[in-house]
Image (tube, rainbow, N blue to C red; front, side):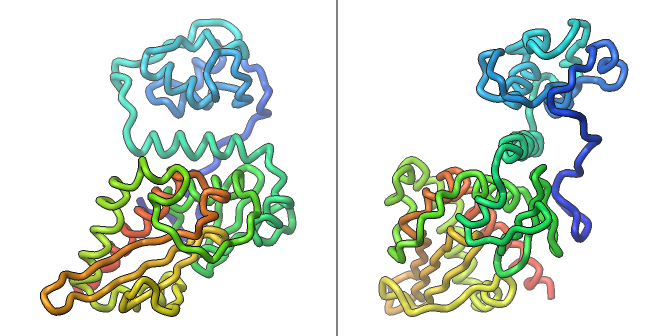
Length: 297
């Protein structure tokens, strides 16, 4: 995905009062319900749970898949909106799922005190906006959850950032580095993490000797004292309270190279395990793009 400089990942649509009750007849003239995001926009986004779903986003997804009916939302008047499932066949694309996640997080962020969140995260707050350092660059988040920055903003950044603001407990970093599987909920994610993060990153390091220089230059990384008998130990700070340690050992005397990724033991006090995984895998994909670009130069 490409975004204009300074543009948030999802363009904010026309805003309505979150509790406004708009007759279904009027809404049906305005929009065709051919994807889950269009269904979500019809709801009041209060997450009242009266439909027996945890969130309005979950209800919209269930309607789109044909598992629920739109008239089951108690905040909609009338029942003449038809879901055009024939065009979409109730399938949710990866892009739609990411948009779902982002919109749901934006809804949750509306009830967060950004000033208090900034103090917990070591971020700054002014003019009703929170400014967070990501790889040394400023990202600005407003009360609607819209992000702006001087660089392109991707879902793998947006989702962890919003989760970080919502979830961070402000716990001081312990300075103790642990593997993902050692985190409280890391065991169930570790095998996938190993396949999607550590192994691809190791392959990149083996082929592209300047990879770690790129990490320092582009992502504001910092080479630190070697850990775990590695040749290179590098710390990245994708989020203020979620640093990542990458340790790489070069191949030697018939032994293949090794690469491991570690997190501060407090990581789950600031971000849920799924977002930790998402953040790390997103980083690897960015490194792969940089390596691919270099291969054509």
